[in-house]
Image 1 (cartoon, one colour):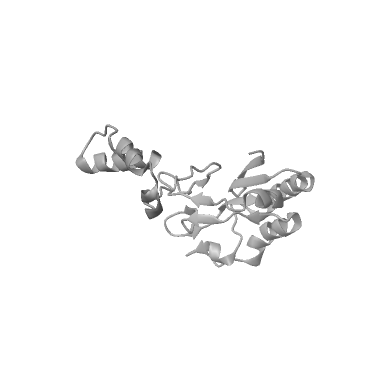
Image 2: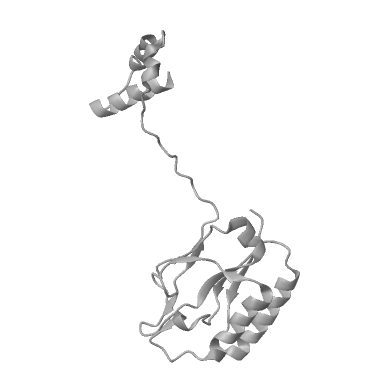
Length: 182
């Protein structure tokens, strides 16, 4: 996977974050690759991103939303916890994973996992770049038409006579597997 990654730590007030938005927009204007921006933006994106704190003002969410609209970027689907930061009274979603259109075209299925915070007041984000595919085990099946084949009993006997070890159910399972392979 080839992509660009930017780690973010946004400053604590709207005015100071202005440089962040300008710098990211400058990069976005020249970005030709898939791009993932992830970290602590120190601002919310939607009114619902804060619980129990001061009422959200339009000025708090304007710059982040404007940045997303101007660059065509969007938030990666997030799973897990609803909020990424707390002081045990206020809960906010200020940590995010943002991606561009190139990323979406290649990896639209990917999700950002909002994990448990453990010893921090922030919840870490995790994007699994590689997933291990589960092998879809199929059940043993017997096709009646095979019983009429002239070699049928010989093939079954050869598979069943292979040595198998362990508990009786495990031995039966192994013998069926040998028959299936034969």
